[in-house]
Image (cartoon, rainbow, N blue to C red; front, side, top):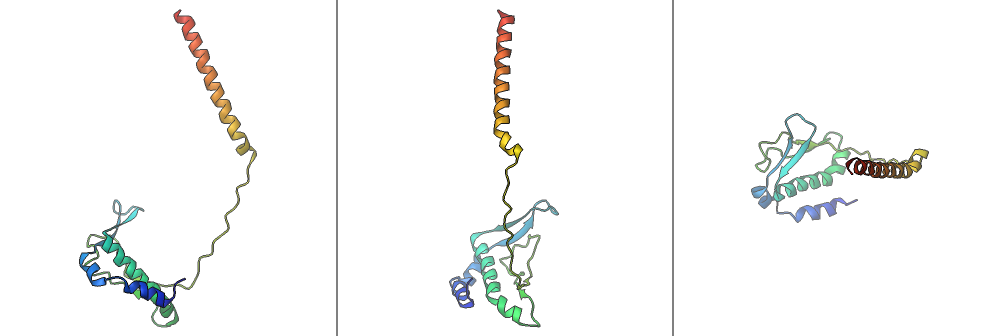
Length: 143
């Protein structure tokens, strides 16, 4: 986990004003109200959005400690935000919870799993034998 100072060092590496002059960033939905969303952006726009997220990460601890301020605002009405976007992110609401990874359940091999290669092989053999019998029968009819 990066400290506040380490995040600030990364943030300071960006030329924010130059990125704002060139950047385009937007979040849209495919087909209007579908479940498929996508980001439409150039490199500078992606860097600006990443910069906003880095700033939010830097300010998260301060925001969580403050009893009155519980969000980190985003500048969503900037010129670099694509006007044709369907979704505008206006703020980040930090939470203190951590994700708890559940251990993956091991797949136990069943009897059917063990028989699968033999079943596929048997089907292949039946198809080959059927093709041979069919060709032999065809030749007997013709000749």
